[in-house]
Amino acid sequence: MKASAFAYARATSVGNALELLVAHGDGAKVLSGGQSLMPAMNLRLLAPEILVDIGDLAELRGIERKGDVLRIGALTRHVDLLKSVEIAAHAPLLTQAIAHVAHPAIRNKGTLGGSLAHADPASELPACVLALNATIIVRGPAGERRIAAEEFFTGIYETALSPQELLVAVEMPVAQQDSMHFFHEFARRHGDYAIVGIAAQAAVQGGVFRDLRIAFFAVGDRPMLAAAAARLINVAVTPQMLADASTALGEQLDPQEDQQASPAMRRHLAKVLLARCVSALLGRPDLAGISA
Ligand SMILES: Cc1cc2nc3c(=O)[nH]c(=O)nc-3n(C[C@H](O)[C@H](O)[C@H](O)COP(=O)(O)OP(=O)(O)OC[C@H]3O[C@@H](n4cnc5c(N)ncnc54)[C@H](O)[C@@H]3O)c2cc1C
Image (cartoon, rainbow, N blue to C red; front, side, top):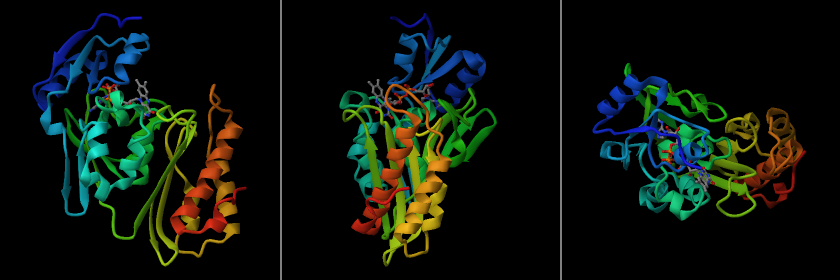
């Protein structure tokens, strides 16, 4: 199938892109790498009147470290993140996760901003920005807004972005010396969307979590932080504590049924991933099989 007819404008600056978005309202769609937007248009799930192509806006591209903050431009492609030494050094969770996003052809075009704005609940990167405690920076006619990743994802393919706003960058704290991360997803084939996945960032000192953020994806209508992680911070984790955290996780999740898995299977896989994550981060093989 082919997309419905649409107009096309190539933005010459962020200001120009915002003018176009304001002028066309709900009829406009931002085009970044096109790896989600174009398939949706070709399937006629979306029929925007005009595409505002931001692909020429070099100011939205790039990775920069300033002190303890890592800033990634929205137009930075998956392949650039995957190959970046800055990302490998300061946000290695992203390096590991991006290898699981689709395939090289898609990673060569797809962008971080596009992935976050698209907000597929089965996507890897939205969960990573939750785990990394990132801030999403958006610009609109009223100026700039900084939105905590936890507030950004509001439902299936829904975010806190208004149609007149552009996602311009993502900022996150750089990984510290005691930082550790864990990423895993269950997928039928490498590169497929996950059946269930986990992305976690932790600070570990002397075998104890000083901080722990565990995000799950493909377990509900949006990526979500496991509230139960808080129970495992600043304590010597016992198998019983982990089993209790596993029970709490099962109660928090509200997985959906689709052709890949039932809600019960997703809940079970999430609990398996929680145990493997905690076990790996603490270097405690005795915890690997603990789930409620
Ligand atoms: C075969 C296939 C397999 C895939 N597998 C995976 C996978 O395993 N995991 C995964 O996460 N993704 C997967 N994807 C999707 C893809 O990797 C990302 O969703 C995609 O890269 C999004 O980035 P983009 O730059 O291409 O966004 P686009 O397709 O250009 O845009 C996506 C949406 O975001 C909006 N948007 C884009 N940029 C901005 C911005 N800066 N500000 C505001 N709104 C914006 C657009 O208007 C559109 O609604 C797959 C895609 C295909 C085709």
